[in-house]
Image 1 (cartoon, helix red, strand yellow):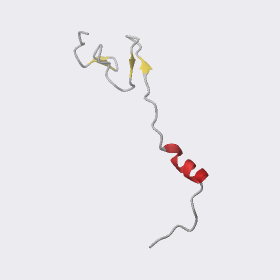
Image 2: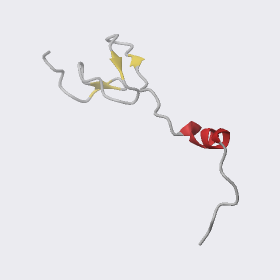
Image 3: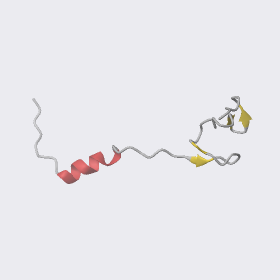
Amino acid sequence: MAVPKRKTTPSKRGMRRAHDRLDNNAYIEDADSGELRRPHHIDLKTGVYRGRQVLEPSDD
């Protein structure tokens, strides 16, 4: 059975875990409506994606 040669220091453990955090969600302001939306997602209020109408606008 494999046994670790030395104890991993807190510094090394922290460096290994540095990339395990959750990133914040990115939002951009839509050029046409001014609403915040996720990049590469359909604007649900207007139904437009990349300048094309892909969904019917919602009546909110």
